[in-house]
Length: 558
Ligand code: AMP
Image (cartoon, rainbow, N blue to C red):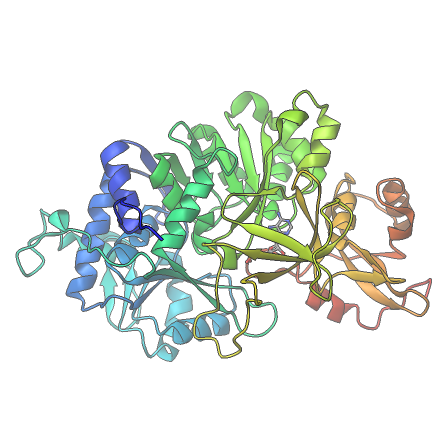
């Protein structure tokens, strides 16, 4: 083999913020803060302050590879930590504050976090947990001296004081090199950059350890036109939290592309999100279906006309299936196109994106919505296949459903400090645990999690397809479908519905609504009504819990 003669520059996260500071210095990062007001800064500010973070960590004795945790909402200080921590060679461990306290304790200990940076709102939680996090040497509250809370945390540090000491105004950081003139260290691109634990619906959460290389390559995919097409003309609202798979890589892709970023802080209710969209002229918004449901409900309750008031052009929906009714609402009421996307923590997360092809040009809304229901086509870098129970590859005919396997440079090769081992097959594929079809154009559609599939008479019924159809009913707030034991068919679907407040809905009218919307033999055998459905820390339906709740349930047909 002849070696190419191109420069071998490592793909480092620090290079992203350097690029943004050089080429998009004035592009804004707008944050709603925990303290209350809207804060505005630029990529140049983030770069300068991220260097101060890096310098401050060095002074604290943080070594390359050490894990530095955050417990924080989306905001500029969190973004500074994204660059400062990874840029100096340490590992940014973003903790999901919605996990149970025992899980937070477990993962901080499993990761052996050295310092923990946190938003003001998490003081009570940390006061309870601090004593059981022995590796944490100090807690840094992400605020200024003026807002410093009264609390009993050991070794409490104030973020602005800590990094201020490294700025040009604040002194020389102890050995003559101030934060502003800090040079990012250069190291191998395969070095670990950040760590995110899965929500652990079964067993303990598992750590996914990203590298600089994987994060930079993933950003390129996110910026690509048939990816999420992030660019400098976009104002992107990151509703997806920075503690969940690095906010789908947006803080990195934003710097790569110079997109203006809007960070909502802790306020994710419909009103707050709508007002940010309107006031900041957001063109692209990214989030899971649950937050969009809250937004749509707010719009309906107040009677707003988003099409006239907002500049929203696209909404990226992932993390759970985007129901057809949701894509339709965004098209008709907002004039915005829903970009359905699929991925997972183990995939950084981007796997597929549902953009339209030239052949869909001129399609009616109805036809387009049928395409948008699918999770989309693989972005370059993600090699994807579906297989049967024996591992044999299935046809890409849009009908055959099988286990979805993936491989690529931003997909995990194994969990962090995991004893169970063996997540990758002999060909290097990772089993996503999802079941899907792929059609002749390469559009993948998730039909279920493999453990949630409903096996009826030897065939599989997609619980997701049924849920999406049910959610189309105007009186349905949320729907879940689980398989319930059946003497003849092995399992049959039970539909569990949360009605919208003040709405009437009977079992019969629900079933009637579904007729013609799904295959006849998929029609649920019964409908149960509940006040609320159980969710995981990342907003997904907890089917296991639902199955436990309905353990003794007997179908009328059984
Ligand atoms: P997480 O690692 O918490 O992001 O969860 C990843 C899982 O969420 C995937 O394996 C899927 O089961 C589910 N998921 C993500 N995006 C979608 C989507 N667009 N449609 C259906 N399920 C999705």
